[in-house]
Amino acid sequence: MNPPAFSRRLRVLHLEDSVLDHELAATQLRRSGLDVEMRRIETAAELRDALSETWDAVLSDFNLPGFSGLDALEMVRAGAQALPFILLSGEIGEDTAVQAMRHGASDYLLKHNMARLAPAMENAIAAAEAERAHRAADRELALSRQRLSELAQHLQTSIDGERAAIAREIHDDVGGSLVALKFDLAWIERRTADPEVRQRVQAALETVTHALDSSKRIMHNLRPAILEQGLVAALQWMAGRFEKRTGIACAFRSSHDELPELPAGVPLVAYRTAQEALTNISKHAQARRVSIDLALARGVLSLEVADDGVGLTRADLAKARSFGIRGLHERASTVGGTIDLSSGRRGTSLLLSVPVAAAHAPPVRDPGPDSDLEHDPTTAWGDL
Picture 1 (cartoon, rainbow, N blue to C red):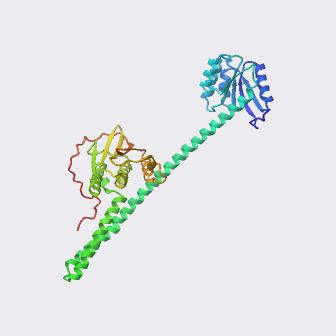
Picture 2 (cartoon, rainbow, N blue to C red):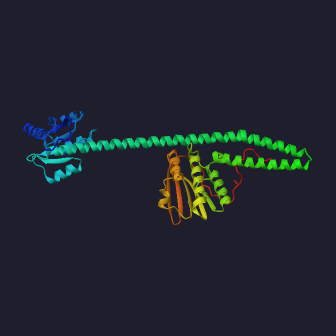
Picture 3 (cartoon, rainbow, N blue to C red):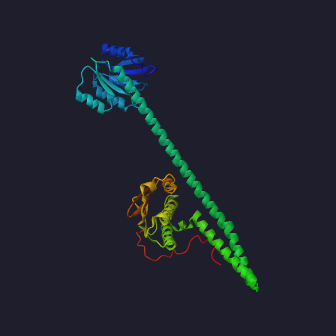
């Protein structure tokens, strides 16, 4: 005889209207080496009350007073414990047995051949415990993923906050000082007739101007002030800048001239997503045309950036250090959005989808070829 699989006492609930059959089943389990505590019940009411207690398994006859083994199985499956359920009957048709197994029964046995009762009980309990452990592991994994997502959201929010703070410091301290220095140099230039001094002042003015331009560029990268004019204007400006800088044709289309007020964080996520996509296109795609499409419909904001470049391979997407794509997914998740990336011989398409609160949208726009957004709106210090 094989040693029992369980060293602890097992609590088994037995639905049986025959005292003799109950004793035979208990004896068979104990002879097999199982330490079993069995309680016999007969009615649906008794089963309903007993299920409030803790059990390891349910053993049930098929023909019971006022209800059947299938009814008992349904009651057990509706409980919170997910108990293993074994049918033990004097006679049970094959169709009925198959139906019971489809509805979640662990096993079925005939009373005149109970040699398999103990192994069936052990297997059913072990399988149920493994299933509970698997569900517990799934819950822990889901909780871990939720915590990781919350951490990523917190880190992204912290990064954006730090970027905004640094941009303000550059604007207030560095920018203000450079502008003041430029005024002083201009004053000196106007009041000196010495050619050598004027030459040195002019060189200094060019250096200061370059520093101002660099500060504006850094400020824009840290905190895109263009978003204050709206996401549509920001993306239109970005498309124009990209085309001028790279020589790649970039078309921007939007379903609306102005979008309704979006939830906090959504415009920045959309802007950064487009920015990252265009950066990748300029570096790797070898594209000739790029399109940026922005739409708001049925409570979902969609932003698609597509190109006609060489596309991405599976190996490119599976790179261990492809943090740019991972970063896009994490950033999108901070506002409840998703990123879909598809690539083929005709180029690559990146689609950001973010559910937003329903709002009345402004009239549909017809974007023209001309744009008055040719200047850099981050130029907050003016020209001298």
